[in-house]
Amino acid sequence: MAFEKNVFNKTSRTDSEIAFFGGMTIVYKNSIDLFLYVVGSSHENELMLMSVLTCLFESLSHVLRKNVEKRWLLENMDGAFLVLDEIVDGGVILESDPQQVIQKVNFRADDGSLSEQSVAQVLQSAKEQIKWSLLK
Image (cartoon, rainbow, N blue to C red; front, side):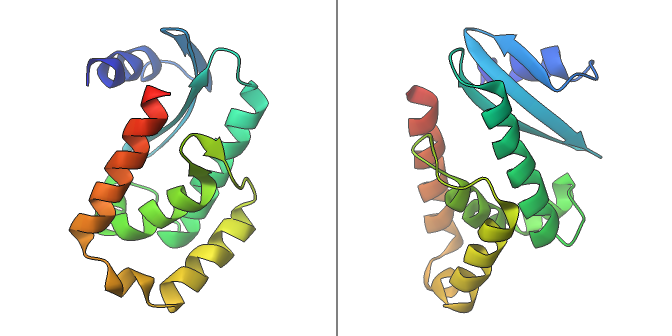
């Protein structure tokens, strides 16, 4: 949690979209009361990280019906995790086109996979994915 707090303290007061911290390249975007971050190694291409961030933001904007803010995100966490799951897996970028992500998320939601998993299972899966992507 110290890393996240330090990153937030460093980025919350600036208007730039990129930061370097602790040997990591960080691209970020804020929307109302929500900050979205994509973190990569110092060797990662900043433009690729920004492409992932843009895809994440635009996909979330669609899933949250243009309300990309904390309250809506918390109320629609299952959809947000599906979006994240379609974009990256284990730190590997799978997709950077928001239209493709939205199409896949809508297909998975229509397929009934959301109703088959409990919220706890989705949260646990997301925690594991985030943990492993941070440890790599």
